[in-house]
Length: 235
Image (cartoon, rainbow, N blue to C red; front, top):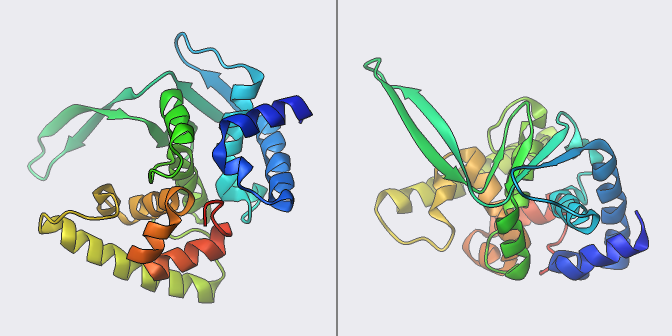
């Protein structure tokens, strides 16, 4: 990793500037490995220079600071759209009726395929890093989650910790779902109530972008994430 490229990423990414020297060195090594192992494919008219590619790799590797390079296993490509992108969805209901629609997304992680990100939203997250959003961390949480063979909101953990994690995350998830179902405004983004795996990905965003709110709203979840990811750069 050339010094000038890493320094340029530092200038773009507030999370990097908040790291202590030891964690910064570890992230630099992970970022270099990401750039060596992954193909970064810009879509349409988007052109990415070396510093921008380094920025993408660094924000993707933030959740791997403690977990390590194992989090890069099982996929090979990062696809980057200039902005939000549309995907076609289909669903067959209980009556056998096929429903088709389009979703507009800023990120997606396929279980056995690439990570897909919106460059505009990566830039927006870096410009306002304490707003509770970090789309790269969200999608990387999905990639970590599925490493144990199930996309279920529980990453690979030692068995005793896994039981504690499942208990505390389920309780927090259930409480959030009740608030959302009752139409109440929630401090944590209501999208987290979509499914346990989305809950894990959303609270991961808060760990990196608004850890104080997460700790105030869901202290047990926050404690697990601090143990799993290490302290938030903004703790």
